[in-house]
Every structure is written in C-alpha cells, then in structure tokens.
Length: 463
Image (cartoon, helix red, strand yellow):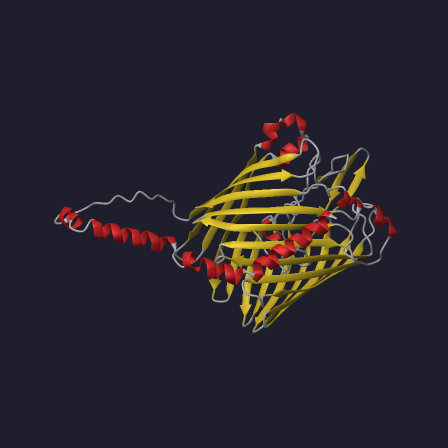
C-alpha cells in the first residue's frame, strides 16, 4: 500500500510541476533573466560612478601591479561530497541516520602536443556513522567494505595513431547498448552494487584495464578489445541491510588471464546499429564447494549480441539482444546453459524539458533445469524486468526532478524498487541531491529487503 501511495504521490508531483513549468518560468522570469554576473556588473557600474574622479586621480601615472591570488593545478579537478541517509524502518544498528559519508574525487587530465591524452581519477570515502555508533555493533565484513575506501578508477592514455585508427590503453569504462537501467549487452564492466537502487548504472560501473582500438571505415567502426584485468561486481557485504542471509558469501576466485571482445558499429542518419561478440569471465559466477571451503568461480562464457536504435521525431526506439553460451549455476554442477536476453524500449522527448523512457527485458534460459529454482535467487525459465523513468528540468535546468521504478516479473509482481529525487544547482560548482528510495517485495529476496526504505540528501562542491 505504501508503494502505491508513493507512486501516485510522485506522479502527481511530477505532472503538477510539468503542468505549471511555464507559469513558474514566467513568474520567475524577472529574477532568472537577471543573472548574478549581470547584477554584479550593475553594482560595479554604480560603484564606479561613485568613484569617478577618485579612480582617475589615484591611478594616473601609477603602474598598478595586481597579484593573482587564484591558484589551481593545470589539469586537476575534483569534487567533495557529503551525504546523509535516513533509514525509515530498519532495525538497530542500521536505523535512523544510517550513513554519514564524506567522499572526495580527484581527477587529472593532461593533453600532449601530439594529441594524446592521459586521464586518471581516484575516489575515497569515509562513513563516520560506523565509528559514531561503535564498530563493535557491525560485522567485520561490513566495516571492511563500507566504512572507508580509497580506489583508483580511470587511468588510461588515449590518442590517434593514424587518420582512421585510435587507441585507448588502461583502466576504462566501455558501454555497450543504450539502456540506463537494465543491462543486456552492457557486460564489459562490473558494478558497485553494495547499496542497490540508490544511483543509476552510469555511476556504478567499475573501470577495467583494457587495450581498446578503433578502426574507422566510412560510417562504420571496428573495435577489438583485450580485457587485461578480471574484476567482478561488488555485492552487499555480510551483515549489511542488503545481505539478509545468515552466512557470508564465498570469495570470488581470482584470475589473471586475458579475455577478448569485439564490436562493429555503424552510425547513420536517424539510426545506428552495433554487433557484439565476447569471450569473457561470467560476472555472476557459481559456487563450488570442496569440503569446508567454498569459492565463487567465474568460467569463461561466449556472448553474441546486437543493439539497434532508431530516431523518429521525438521518439527513440531501441532494442538489444544478447545470446549467452556456457553459463553455469551453483545447483547444477558442470552442466552448461544458454540464455537469450531481449530488450525493447523507447525514449520520448516530445514534452519540453522532459524525457520519458520505458524498457522491457525478457530472459529465456535454454535447456532449463528445475534445480535452478533452488538457487539463492531462484531462476524461472522466463523472467521479465521493467524500468520506467521520467525526468524534467525546471528553472532554466538548475532543478531536475526524476522518478524511476524498476520491477521484476511479467505482472510487475516479483519485487523491485522505486526512487524519486531532485537535483538542484545551488551555485557555481555547488549542487544538492535530495530523494527517497522505496524497496518493493514480491519474492523471497526482495521481501527480505523491502523495509530498507530510505531518505537521502547530499551536497557536493566541484572545483
């Protein structure tokens, strides 16, 4: 019932804001049309008028030396963020203000005279809530994963070798497909999924070391990729609110080999198409037990896929298809399976400053075996995922209102989440983000986390 009220309330707010956007703009036109720079310029003009005569006298014949007090390192940018999360229904020690995280991101970019570019960035965070409440109240796994972290993200060099041949070497993100919420062909980068539902996939991808080359032939691009680093998705740690199981998960097996991928894509007027092939480590993996020890193995699988996007007026129609071969599950031993994933979706931008999108994914496991229903997350032969999103800009795009609902099941009845949030630009480089996440039950795994609903607010400063 709470989820229904939440959806209706959010829809009413967004439609109400959309319906009154023009009126709001008109009402604020007298303020918005006078930017701060102009106001400062007007104040300076008045002040200059008052100082006429004084300025002319005091500076005449005198060479003024003005010291530039601004200081910056060439190529260095960064962002400071403070976030607070309030949990509505969870039990101690994850109740009330459950997170108070400070994070820092530092970016460096350097362009060489020959056109090559080097870019790197690192992120660090510290969640003070664990020490405020006492670390003895939390599992060691949760402390290790969520209390603090320093990590190198992107680190690559990129450049043009010849007129039609580019290269990009190092840790990077490569996105296949177009969906912002559901992954079908987007398989090359794992995710940081330790706090699911709070941010979009674009902020969850973990860079991987790759050697990527682009060869251009007319409207087509051929991209062979060697994946030099084997990383896997970060999951919620044992003891955290998103890991309800009574025992910790096994560790991922480590690999140091090289895997490969290839894409061939063409861009044309009004449409584009891409074909994909990869032999990579299965990110999901399967549990192998030997005596008292268990480990998650990630065997290599084959993937063949395609993505097609067609632009028609205000509509973008999109589809993705992926065929996987060699999948293994924890309950079926060495038996291998195939799976076909199909995405159909659209984006609509026919309403001013508004984007509406919907994605539907159908997954079909070949050679289906009833034993996979005993997996930690039971698997049906056919499964469905839905993602609906609406986003609107207001006040000259300084405020963006967003709503997203993601649901599993043919009839939207197998769990998911919905999130509503507002981004607002407080000033130059200063932004705030306020929102709420509602987790929805429907299956055993989603019922276990449906009470993790939360409110969040963060403020960031970019320099």
